[in-house]
Length: 323
Image (cartoon, rainbow, N blue to C red; front, side):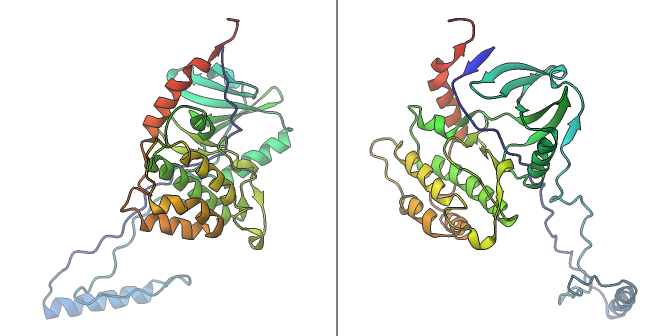
């Protein structure tokens, strides 16, 4: 086995939102007076026979078109998160371990039937009932800003969680010789704010947030670890401290110190640490969106950043048994 000298926390769960259906304007139809009267009568009769849902507005018709809005396409609810699959068998029959994360019960593994498919397998040390509660929490808080929980294995009295693989933490980025530009800073901060907002909408807050709990995937996607350990608190208790916006401000300040000599930060980036301490999540997201015409908010080349950090840190890999 190979052991990596990184120390990430256990991961949280996320799910990619489905594409939303966009309303389509009906084709304008020009009808003669007689056909229009007939069509108006048909519409009136249909509206009488069709009950109007109590939680929706009655249908209205726009000038120039006697036709009602087209019926929406029946699609699966994108907000419905599929249940996490539980498998009652040894996960090592399906996966093979390749790397153990130093000091953690977490392994980088690959699918036996497809060596190119990598995952993280976490061995839980809780009682079965606690493990079930943890899995249920992760199902409830699923979001694209959190690592995706793929499967839950139960075997020999132990529980194993199979996560999508993450590549490295922001803490490792800070520990490397790589520089950070404004695009990379924006690309890291935006998904974290979205994840915090998602938890807040469920009355929850992260238990902790630091550079070591913010991860990047191989493709440069940001994932926040620890959503499964998020706490339920009252809305009146939610502020910059409990929502971990102050903690995010500390991460931002650390990242900004890793810029190349002579780097000029925009006013939006310079005010970000202070804004994180005084603005709400919604205001922060609105400010970022309003300034999307500049570098701030457009994101950066995080995939390239991951590749460079990996190359910089490759000398820290210890091969077990080679000492």
